[in-house]
Length: 259
Image 1 (cartoon, one colour):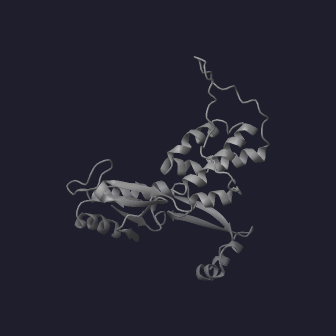
Image 2 (cartoon, one colour):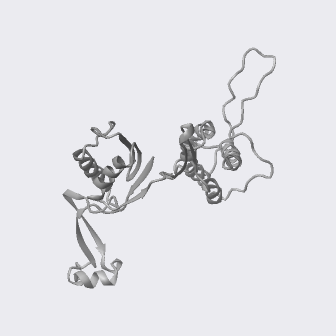
Image 3 (tube, helix red, strand yellow):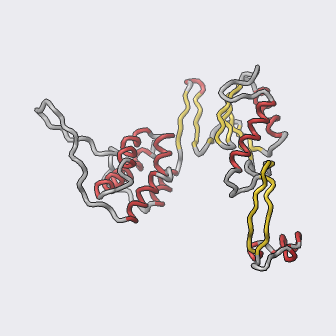
């Protein structure tokens, strides 16, 4: 397994339909103003009008245009989506501009590299240790790979200003109360605790929607998913109980981050 990263993937992709925007002259660096004589192109409101002919950062369709161009180039070289190469023992996953490449014999990986280097500047990781934010530890003899994200949880706790508890929390979500001796175990009562103010609602959505813990749960630690699902179902109208679930989850994650 090896990884390839395309640099500046969104830039300079040809566009069939040009885009236009206006920008204040004083937002341009002085050397750009002098190089292109922009003072002679300013309208009476102080704007310079620009035409976009190739992909650039901030352009909504830049990612799609770059992907479509990459697919055409790979197809031309014999690589097709959801299939192996036409005859080489090689396959890969592609996330935006990051390739995770499974290959047999180095010459086959070199072929993919040569195809990409015709059009892009790339970074190559022959050890395959980093991919889409994950650290991968390959154990080829046992046919296993160990996934981790060192430092990720500590950064998340710092971001949300959450102090680790003095007493470790060993479960990410409250377990259902058992009624011993009863043949029927009823579902928990509805959450009737008070609604949270808007600023707390935003905080809960940051933990989930921005993917801070959701990504970690899906990629590394599946024990978080039940808790995340429970919190996500209540994020539209979070209550004090929802906030307590967030606290328990954040109390729990430092333990799992050690492994």
